[in-house]
Image (cartoon, rainbow, N blue to C red):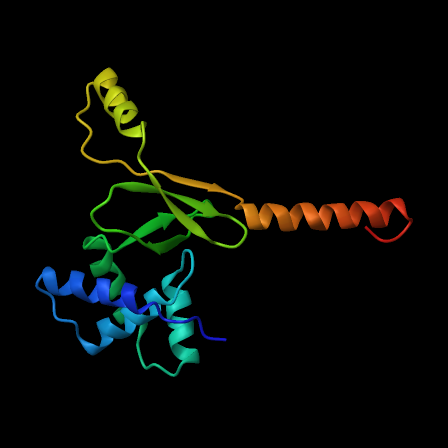
Length: 166
């Protein structure tokens, strides 16, 4: 089943390209549609695979170039996953934020900077640095995956207590 394209998200991506003076070429529009139909984080390989399934003729280099451009425009941000792999997530370009990323389902959530900005500045002052930027990615398990895991554990525990397979 194909994820639905978020037309508002696609429009926002196209507008960001045009504001920055880039043409919304057919390939960039295709990448914008693929990005806008994602939930949570995604990789370039995910976009390429989805494009193939939808019979969109687009090469790896096109996707990587488009993602690099969208990253530079801050429409998407690159996440460094705990595995060492890289993924991307759609973001609000003008709001500094961080990400909560579910290690189970890949869902990501933007979270406000809160008190972190002051802490980062203090760390910089303490060590003699002038901090120009920072980013934070928090990895864990979202409430849906936690509940599913607890449900499986409870079912497994009940099976074990009844002598069934765990």
